[in-house]
Length: 241
Image (cartoon, rainbow, N blue to C red; front, side):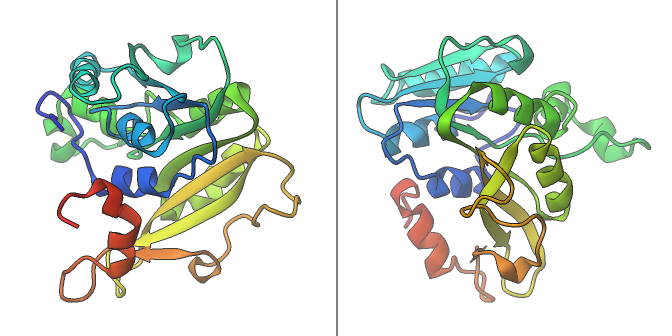
């Protein structure tokens, strides 16, 4: 997986997200903010030969990198990479699954050296200015097929905010996975499956319960080794497992 031209490299969050998605006969997938193309390629590996996958990327060098990675894979005929912003992307059909590892750093109101030193591409990839939760949920609500799902990740501390934003577009969190770096650390990430349904439907979960109310994943044990649970989830995509 080449990533030298991408501001944001392949990371654990994308690996967890892609591994957690359950295609269940999916015929059409959209990866929003594909970066290296990692999620699009993971979705190709998890679905059958009749499934088509679209991948959207706003940053030019990342889009070119994603195209190169797709062309070098055995799934190149099933994946199309589009160099475009989400707000101007007009898909011809709806999608059974939309997947995204979106930007998750807000713009800093008081710029620090860390923000100042980031390249424009890296800031675009890491900050929410170009893909806000509202923009993602609005697009998903308009373009997910009946019974389809939006899979995405956001910081755990933003759980209530993110789920309220989704509900604005009648998207309900039907599944969540709370992720910790280790057993002694606080949760840092929440992986979501959103679907278009009422908040009180039987398969949905209430907004922002305590961390113990949801399934959890611990990445490493206290010796710094990957946990059996993390290995089991990600093994199909992680050669070292």
